[in-house]
Length: 274
Length: 241
Image (cartoon, rainbow over all chains, first blue to last red; front, side, top):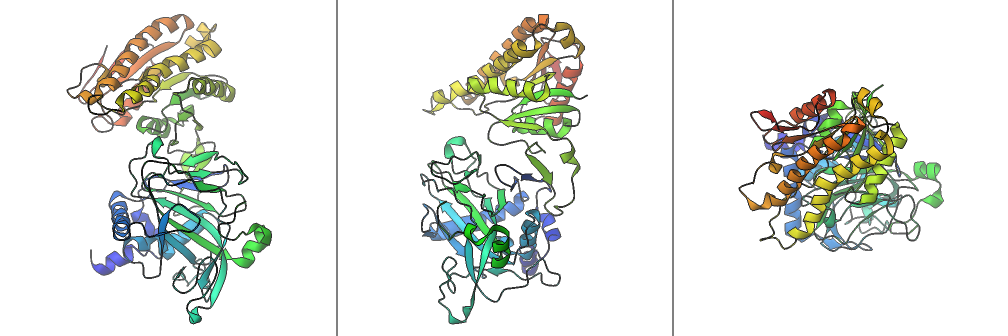
């Protein structure tokens, strides 16, 4: 395959262009404890192998990146320069596929990251992900609009701080949007056994002492996605004996749309506990 | 009215294939551990991620999925209770839950600790679950049970028939050998209840044997009349013992 064909393969412009990369065309839509999507064996083996190789190359080169504030995990945010297999998760086709599967109208703003939990990492706390995020402007029309299939804007921590909106590049003109969908794609994990832990716990509420009512094991090449709502409480279940690796991403909606739907009081700053 | 099947091990290779192939023929209660079967359930519908608004035919017959750790005896009771509460009857019990891990006690210091669980899941759970159904539903209804062709199929293994040339498989094989003996014992015990009990003992699937063949064998046992038999399924041939 030529370099340009490879490049196109990892940057599909429409959901239909992803079909040859998917291992099958059946994902699950769950209703409990809050609406979410699950899929296993997401990509064809050869495609998954390239995604895993790309992730492991990053892991080897960075030892997992930097410690993320407020969490017992390491990671990095991928910028618009991301190339190769991981570009897939920043592609318009993937964005539109996830947005449609979750029935949300997304703006094209994507925070894409790589996460690495070391063995013994502590559990996180239940949180909804209904948080604001800041991006360099201007606001694109959104990839669901005809003729604007390229409108993906990746978070750019070097220019605009995603959490605070603080600008380090005066030309950035930051815009605030609200997380609409969270996606976790598990990869490069050992064959999962119960004692490994590292699942994503799903909760009915986020109060003190809340316990997960179900948990999603981090099987390699599997995926969890859900609309960020005031009830989408989830969290990392730690204490395992092996690392837990994932690609994480958030799609976003406009601040007006989120406020109209959920109310301003439901949109919490990143890291706030219920 | 569709026959009601209580299936354990629904998240495994056999269980997944069983649900995929037979959800139309049976009302299935699919008992799984952490991973549910890859089919539509009462909690989850299937959809095509590329065309998410279009319905898919597989969602037409959802199985009733129940998460349970059957190594816990109370969970076995709960599963039987749920099956009867949900469907009011069980016509076919397929004991397919298995701990397939193989370990050698001479090289793995943790092996002994895992054997208890393997014995519980592979050998004791099939007997326990059938016994609860017998006490709670099949007892005192022999003629009705016979008329409905009610029966149990234990999924055993050729590993329970011969000594393997490698030591790691010892306890797995022993657990399946015990299941074979218990199948014959159960057949005698359940005969007065009008319930048949058989086993299928396949070689490794899907590696050496298509999983679909094992499913078809279970289907034939459900539709047949025999009891107390073990259908040995090797790569090339099948035989009864």
